[in-house]
Image 1 (cartoon, rainbow, N blue to C red):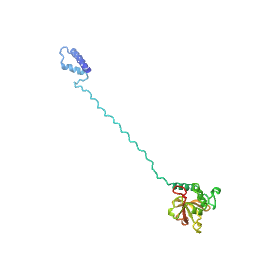
Image 2: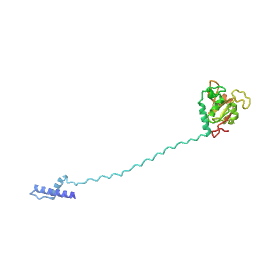
Image 3: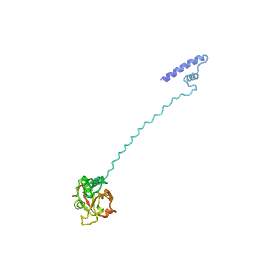
Image 4: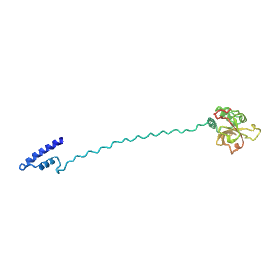
Length: 224
């Protein structure tokens, strides 16, 4: 409506100007129209085109939220048997005394030294397993006897005839140690050597082996 009024006003103004400038001649319609177009800034007389409306923006797309990364599940490890836990504890404790000197008949609480059987008696005793004092008595009375090397497991006692005297089933046993697995024994012998770890099978000790004794039951306690 405003555009129509403005155009009408322009036509009237142009008519008045055109009449004043050409009083002798009657105004023509085309002359009046050219005057209107000049006043509106379109001297060429081209059709006035309105600007096209801007294209509508595409609707914004919300990116999907990333899926949460699942937390890694803890890897389950098989539980060690009770006997194995006890054996590992005994062996670990015994290794604390590596290098402790040897003396026959020695008791650690009074002398700070061990002989072979006082060493096993002391170490196992600290873990609730009572052993007899001598190697022969431990072989005869403590635990279940094991005759085959292939049946040994860590934590078993191992007995030897170190002096090769062979005076009977138990009397020839004069040395004891702890089988710690991987073909090794933890024991003490000889001054200047003391508590040490040595190879079992394929050594002097493997040749002098008499028997073993299982003093750690499957429940981690004394088997008898």
